[in-house]
Amino acid sequence: MRRRAAFILLAIVAGAAQAGDTVTVAVASNFRSTATLIANRFGDETGHAVQLSAGSTGKLYAQIVHGAPFAVFLAADAARPALLEQAGRAVPGSRFTYATGSLVIFSTRVQDCLAALRDPGAGFVALGNPATSPYGAAAQQYLEGAGMWDLVSERAVYGENITQAWQFAVTGNAVIGFAARAQLRAWPHQPSCVYEVPTSAHDPLEQQAVLLDGASEAARAFLEFLRSAEARELVEQDGYEMPE
Amino acid sequence: MNLYGPLWLSMQLAFVTTVVLIGLGTPLAWWLSRTETRWKPVMQAIVAMPIVLPPTVLGFYLLILLGPEGAIGSWWVTLTGNALTFSFTGLVIASTVYSLPFAVQPLQNAFESLPRQTLERAWTLGASPLDAFFSVAVPLAKRGFVSAAVLSFAHTLGEFGVVLMVGGNIPGKTRVVSIAIYDHVEMLDYSSAHQLSLVLLAFAFLALLAMFAVNHRWSRG
Image 1 (cartoon, rainbow over the protein chains, first blue to last red):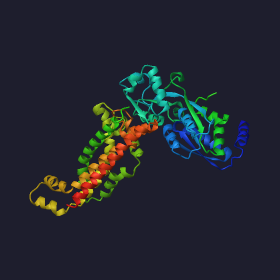
Image 2: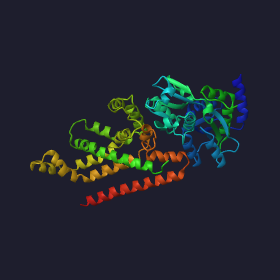
Image 3: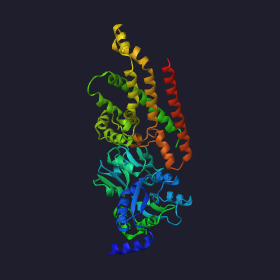
């Protein structure tokens, strides 16, 4: 029943949109799997196809600035969508937070994540590059707040984005990895330990969406769908917090 | 972030890799140029693979092989106590694999075009095979050596995907220039990206120019 209601609502919202359009979406790599679920659901209900291109937020931003033909940008932060809005590349007022991420510490090699994090001899610690990855920056803030940054940065290795930091830890090359909780949810295996970093220990990992210039009605419908209860449920299931 | 630090690191990596590649590539290319075994095409295919494989494939396998639980990495850990991934040594190994064809192929071509009688004459004059190799083959194949060295160096300097996978972006240790440029672009610091990119652009042109100029002069005798 709820699904039907959502569908009718969507049909009204989609209004003039012609069935069968293709929506091109640039998506931050940490959100790719969730976005795929949402895109499939959206496709089933509207007949529009969604084409996802995943990458790091900074790279996708640079591509959009230089004319990449995307209609929707699902970033891993709030800064890049805001910059696009300022630069006149985005539709004013279309920007909103579609998910708030959570940071976890995990390992595939040790039983006590925090002990291994503190132990200078335990091995490499993998995180996203704080300069380019929002999750990496959050990890640094947490470590600084806990007084461990100096100790940990000595043996830190940096992934180009959160997915690569994840790779370093999953392959056992790093003993500890900082990851998005959503990544851990999507992983079919069990880590040997997990510690959920309190969200108060870093700036909120707000992931914002924005409609880009020249977007079609189908693209607008996709963003509307992302706001729907149905999509929010999928986002939550994958380990993200939802904004009120 | 120190702007030119990564450039210097890349130069060091490219230099060490080139030395290793000339050392390993010379006997390999010599063997390939002389052998009559039916396995020769197989060996040639293996050597040439890094040209066609995406660097991410090489990087992915190296990340697993060189890791503390990998076949080579675990052996290295028992030997030295350190991991190979995320280290300069690891990058040298990765770069050697990545640039191998760029050293072996010019050398092999040069050795194959040596006139057979020249070497035989040296042997009949009583030179040992090794002596004949260094005093006859090497000078005659000097163009091959220049090409191999320049291409190995330049190719390693431009390496990105492999280092991204096994390097870990550690400042001063594994943050090479291509990664630094990538970071600058991601951070929207386009002016730093431009500065480093221009240096690389100029270097690539000058290195290739030098190689072609030398080859051109030598080919005219």
